Amino acid sequence: MEEAVISTDRAGMTEPVPIGVAAATSRILLDGGYYQGKEPVVGIVDNTTHVDSAEKFIEFLDIQ
Image (cartoon, rainbow, N blue to C red):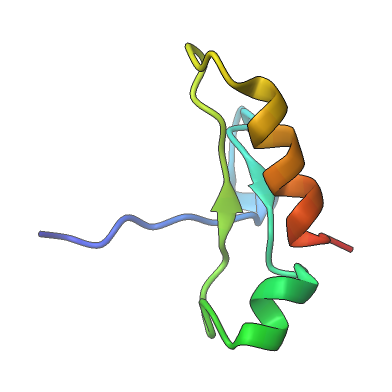
């Protein structure tokens, strides 16, 4: 399977559409050594019934 390419660099985009929250500065992810050399993005599916849980998770990540 081909790896998905995710970029937060808007310079090469003609019509950027926000699809998630860039999490590269998450204290939790940095301290844990997760996603080194990657650009992690947190997304919430549009038909979720637990938006409150998604919000708490994003707050937990402590994105600076």
